[in-house]
Image 1 (cartoon, rainbow, N blue to C red):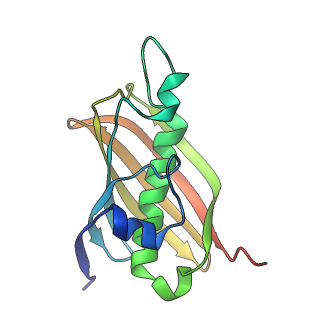
Image 2: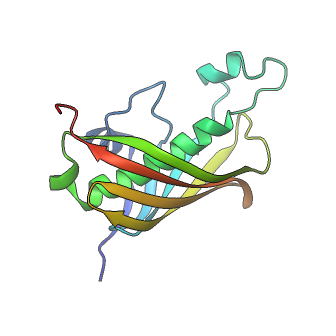
Length: 152
């Protein structure tokens, strides 16, 4: 049976992935079922740097950053599941497929991103993600990523 981690806070996340503000786009990761699934949480603040230009009179979180937040959630799930394999490594997108954006994410929204592993083949991993705000789907995507040693 897979181990379940109830919650990882921002400090624990920073120990697992190299992202830092303004590109660290998750605040907490919950319900991690090792090597299977996890839920990322992002509290969207009106002070986010991207709102300055996207859009000044109607601030909306860019969809590509929602997909990035889903990928960071997946990275935390993988790093917490396989620390010996991922320590000191970077994760790069290889594909983004079936991306759909259902409604805008605005300041004050709390995004919950449920991520499920589809497959893992060595350094290549594939995931399915869905982002929700107040129980409504705002975005979804399938994406693949490769775990890379930055020294090669």
